Amino acid sequence: MFVYPGNPAGILNRRIRLGLVVSRRLGNAVKRNKLKRRIREIFRLNKHRIIKSVDIIVIPQKESVNLQYDKLEKTIINLWIKAGLIE
Image (cartoon, rainbow, N blue to C red; front, side, top):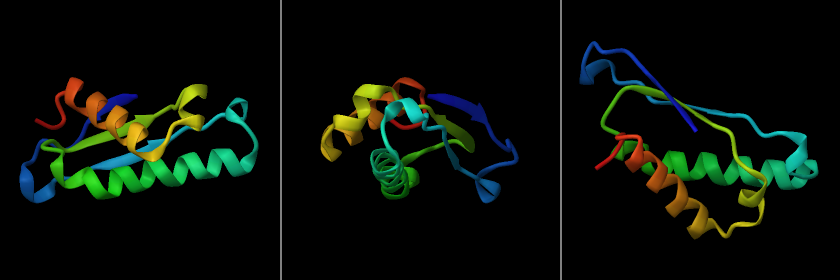
């Protein structure tokens, strides 16, 4: 996961964007699309918790394809905490 700072103009212009890079090595199109849908949904449900204006780029590893939704969500939230995006 990469995090790039966004617009420092303040909360009124707070913009949080998500980028996904999912390689063919993760599996067939069905598996890749399912993973992308899950990550987008986790982002949609939790983006209100992010305190900064940032661009987040997620590059999932092969192990993430087989994770259950709740485990994937915990992993992403923990990464955001380590990156200082949420408290």
